[in-house]
Image (cartoon, one colour):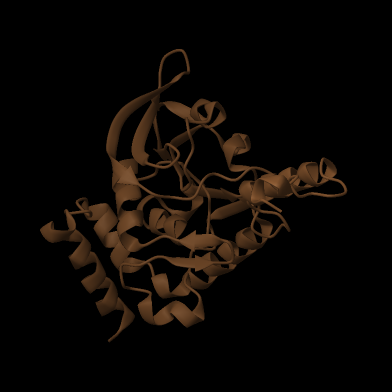
Length: 255
C-alpha cells in the first residue's frame, strides 16, 4: 500500500470514536495525513511507520502517532503561530507543526547533539529543511527567538520551567506532561505577573523526564539513577575494609 494511503488509514483510526477521537481539528488531521512519518523512523522499523506505536531510537523515543495527536490537539496551534518544541527527538512532531504554521515558524531544541543532527537530516529529507533545530538545554528554551505563541515540551517535568513560561507571549500556551510517576498533560498560561497557571488538563501521559546537562543519550552516564548508584557504590566501598562478614556466635550453634 502506498504511504499516502497508509497515512489516511492511520489518521482515520485516530479520528475514530473507539480511539477517543484523538484527532479532532482539521488542521492536525491534514498535517498528519501529509507528513511522511517513514522518513523519521529507523529503517528497521519502517514497516510499522504508520502503525500506532512508538520506537526507542538512540536514547530517545519516537512518539506514537496517538501521542503526537494528543500533544498537538492540546497545543491548539493557529496558522502563523511561532512555536518552540523542547525535545526535538527525530523531528516528526516539528514536521507536523510545520504543516500547520509554516517551516519558518517552528523552532526546536534538544540537549543531545547527535539527535539534533539526525532531526535536521530527517526534516531536510522529508521537505522541512526550514525548521530551525539547535542543541540546547530544553529548560532554557530559545530566548533569541522568543516570545513564542506556543511551546511544546515532549518530556515530563515536576513543574513548568519558569524560563519557558517567561518566553511565552501574554496570550500564549505551554503544553507539557507534569509529574513524576503519573503525569498529567497540561496546558499552562502565563499570568499577568509572569507566573505559570494551569489552564486545562488533558488526561494522563507517560513520557521520559526532561534531561539536564550530563544526562544526554550520547554521554557515558546518561541516567541520573545510574550516576547516583555509582556514587553510592564508591562511598560504600570506602567504608568497608578488611573482614566484611558479621561476627558469628559459634557458641550459639552448640559447637
